[in-house]
Length: 291
Image 1 (tube, rainbow, N blue to C red):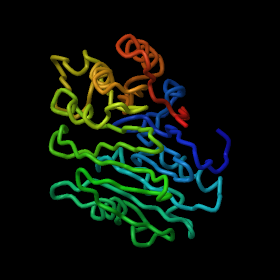
Image 2 (image 1 turned 180 degrees about the horizontal axis):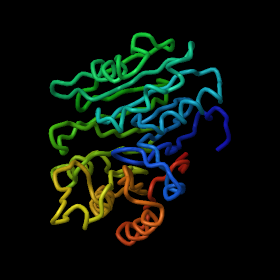
Image 3 (image 1 turned 90 degrees about the horizontal axis):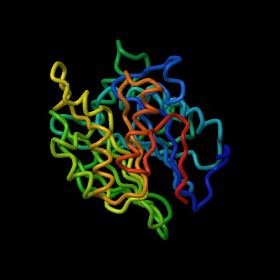
């Protein structure tokens, strides 16, 4: 994909960060990548990001270097854990006049999007406050079952929101992006075995792409000494089961455990393909074109 402004009919995605919990740069993660979660979607001339981990930093630099007449980007946050917002403070369009950034986040009990982002940039933790950014920033809180329509009214992009509570103590927004009869579903920090399975399957029916949390192996999830049950994440097998049940065309495993190096990720991808053949482990720089 060249560094050109997207054509009106294109729909593709690119992963800028694929790790959960914390970044893991180093020689053993070069192939998969070490940045925390961020997925870009280009739908026509619209530019969207799903989550704002450290991968968002490189995406922002790329957007500004490309230029183009449409200096607008939409960022959809699944929730407010640090690994999903830590790149926003260094997102270059927020520091350049002429750029408009709209950030969407789920309405959660006792949590507001403006407060979370303001606290993450408050002194003494950060030198530039949220209200001091030169770029134009709009914050929008989303309730469950909200539909966000963007772009050309004759051929709009539609983002459907479902808030799942299959993560301990928080809610997580699941997103279904629809464009020209195609769909991408983004479902991270979801624990399929604790109620998240039905939420994902209902939202992902017939989608072209499902991006699904797959942080753990079965052995890690049920480890008698250090069980991950109730931690808010799925196993690779759970992600594959959801993809089969929803009849999706392609599955990307996502939100990789920081302890999984490149060799283990290749092995886990092979294992997943035995359960659901059209599976890839998301990795930094991987692009997938739908239209």
